[in-house]
Amino acid sequence: RDRIGLLSLCTMQLFGCSAAAQVKSSRETKGQYLSINMSFSVGVMSAMYLTKGISGAHLNPAVTLSFCILRKVKWGRLVPYCLSQVLGAYVASALVYVVYYDAIMEFGEGVLTVHGPNETASIFATYPSQYLTLGRSFLDQVVGTGMLMFCILSLEEKRNTPAPSDLIPPIVATIVLGISMSMSANCGAAINPARDLGPRLFTLTAGWGTEVFTCYNYWFWVPLVAPLIGGPLGSCLYLVFIEWQLPTPELLPQDKSTTVCTISNSIKEPATTQGTGDNLKSTYF
Image (tube, rainbow, N blue to C red; front, side, top):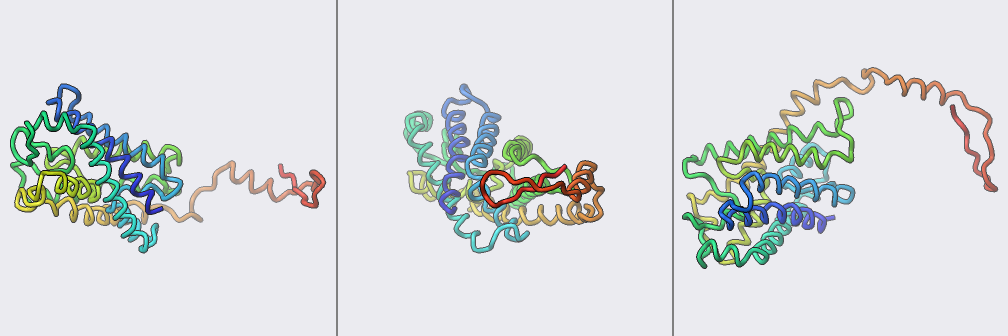
């Protein structure tokens, strides 16, 4: 299951970073910023469909941590899942770099830089806008990740309006798309420590150097720490304002079809023998 985390993050990151490489290296002649937002969302949906039935489709350490706090995931799974997610993002970044190597080198004039009009580091990891303060960027990531958790926790809540299980991946992808379209101007809407750390480690080893960690006054820790705070905060808000306000199961109005089924199931007709075996299957109304 831990290896599945690698595959899921690799899938998501491959979609998103490939779009970022295409948009930037073409100087937005082959796509726009919205292309990147949509590609990451398609990556989320695809990764969830691939791995939801195996590992629960864990793509984000902040979400995994929140589920551990909510006792939906065992604490022993937290570190292995997170490590596999970071590794998956690293592998995907390496693959994008190989595929778009010529375009990246042509755009950057043969130099891999973090600053300037020809910088290419932002293809992989997120960086803050020049006008943004440290505190505001931290708040940006807390709010974005909190919003993610606040929205997705309701999708399987039977006492509210649960989403069909098969439609959860596209719904989560749409939530991610909404967050990235509305909260990415400040610092790229990482809202995922693995999505940022894996590519940043790759750029460190691929030629961009230590500046990917030291630039903007060592800003790299913000997309690592802030989502880990925002996720549990969003979960707490959901518990207080939504889950604890829902009626308990025994107080829910009973569905009419359920009532009919319950009554009919109490009336057993004579059992009929099927086949040559000894098992008797009762036929109900």
